[in-house]
Amino acid sequence: MSGTGKSSVVRELAARGFKAVDTDDGWSEPTLDGRQMWREDAMRALLATEDTDVLFVAGCEENQAQFHAHFDHIVLLSAPLGTLLERLAARTSNTYGKAPEELDRVRGDVETAEPLLRRVADHELQTTIPLNEVVTAILRLVNE
Image (tube, rainbow, N blue to C red):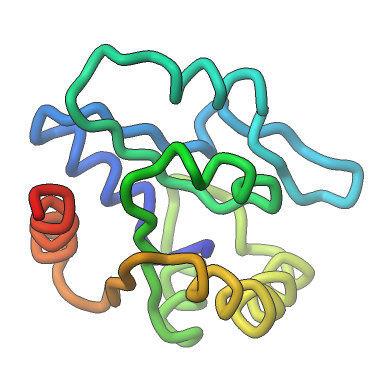
């Protein structure tokens, strides 16, 4: 979900030496309705590459379900709607969430898509805790 901290988590994992991919960075392509989908060829290649012990993939697209079998863990990062809206308004690294129609989409996604994501997730982490604690919790899940 937009504003949950996926990009921040990816940056922190990479800073700690892990291979971590934010699918917003070249792994997705826009659709006619303004959303985006994972580039299936690129994602297949990424997931087939065995150049690291652990690969972290962060993203949320409508076609992600076809890749779920490739993941050992699916972690839903979540935060209350108010927190998401505050983060989107404050962030400077990504313009998404500034336009009223984008904010409406975020609200709709929290209402309709997040419950679906929650059903397929193995774990859920609230990202209202400090980033360091979120990343530590993710690393604990991988090492279980």
